[in-house]
Length: 75
Image (cartoon, rainbow, N blue to C red):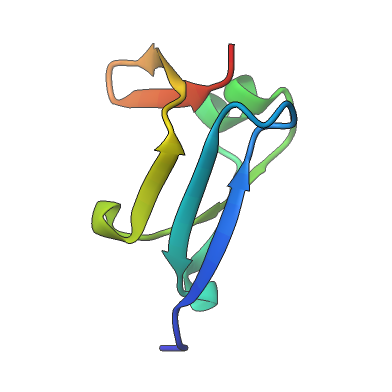
């Protein structure tokens, strides 16, 4: 397992911001139908991390995209 590094990010307008402690070795691509519909693409890049390693600096809005997933977004 590699070392965790701090990364920040957010939406393009800057309203939603976050900080996450990530382990680059936990990155993967998902190409399931639910992810294809959520992104409009063939796949999406993810990085697995515990909730305690991620903090919202400014909260997003949430969309219940399926019975098992809530997705954050900037309205």
